[in-house]
Image (cartoon, rainbow, N blue to C red):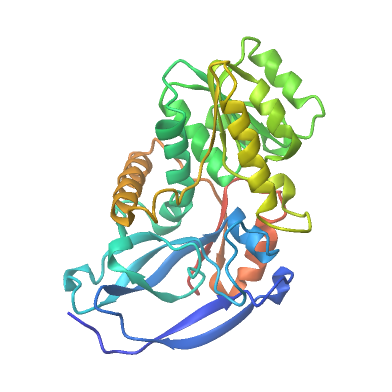
Length: 348
């Protein structure tokens, strides 16, 4: 069934390289959904590190300004295109958008919708869409860590990190997690042994906890410290790099730090020491086969959401802000003072 009713969307726009206060709001009428599209009413979206990079023009695949940020969301279908099952109306789904989710309503390809169980509330589901899929795939598809092994998670209090810690503990894996001292209680509650990332001897502290080396390190920081992460591995261990947070404030080409990282990881993989290094990219394989990528992503999110529904994975929601308060949401997310993810919800 198609819909001809006009939907007015409120959108948060990033006009250029501005401070969070430079974000603007606009209202516009959405076009009717295309034949394979739906209109999704946002119930929860959030602020992730990618948007913090985009604000600075530093995202690897930087979209041109101006644009509406928003990497993922949970929402309810309110209208469908002519070739989409009208029974989807009123049902809740998640979607990974990369941009566009900081909006009250948006157009989504129906093929990109991923079911959300009724028993998982929108903000909880939002917290584990990209974060949960990323953590699940790095742990189980890339590093393939088995029960009884030991891993290191840098940024164990963050969105991906806190999810990764919980998934690993659920799988019977010992976790050492780095975080500032203010978040050590949270990291312990998640099941990891905390180490202060501000300690100049952080890597030495980790080696004291795991003198024989660890089986995997999950590093979103990059920069010079990636060498220390590599050195933590025992023979047969795996380094999974998934970001270059260390360079987020550097001027210059946004792709250069990633390309340098690729070169270093490839060089390490050529060494005959039994260790391996990988760069995890959520979007890998989508251009080659969109259907296969979407199927894999949907399957992995379903695994994560089932753990949430069963109470075995607790989404770490740092705070909730109304869409109109997105500036404050971004400010808090960038303050490095919170554990978990800052979530944006519709106007109250």
